[in-house]
Image 1: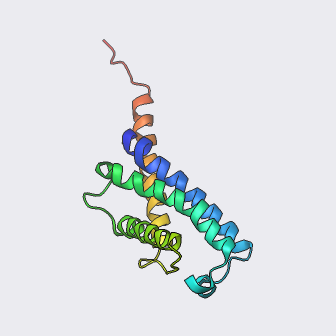
Image 2: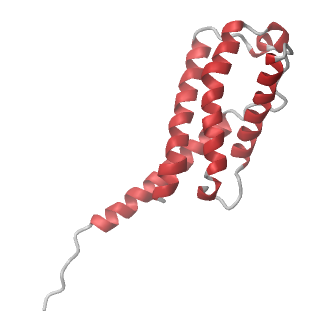
Image 3: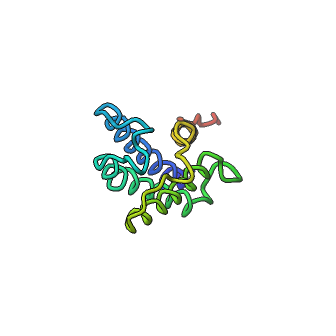
Length: 146
């Protein structure tokens, strides 16, 4: 459990919170509506935030999931994580195409709330279990009377 928290769910949760905070700030600052973020009408500020802030963190999260898949709580890759990793791959293709002067929309959309919710709930579940185990270990033991 400590390895799950230290190597996967802890860092993943922190990175989700960072990206969610950036996304919230972008929305609050007048992020163009989704329709206005189409490849042909993409705002340069949006492209910069996507490429320089969101995607690097997405890559870190994807790498954590893939590199530490053996630490997942579930026996199989949860759909939200699979969808997220697929989205990151799709955005990598979009960025490569943009480098060649071609603008296109990502083939796979970000899973949104289900991804963030999964990560937060899994992290909190493991933290609660860890605290429960630590409390049990640290509980004073009664010494039987002779």
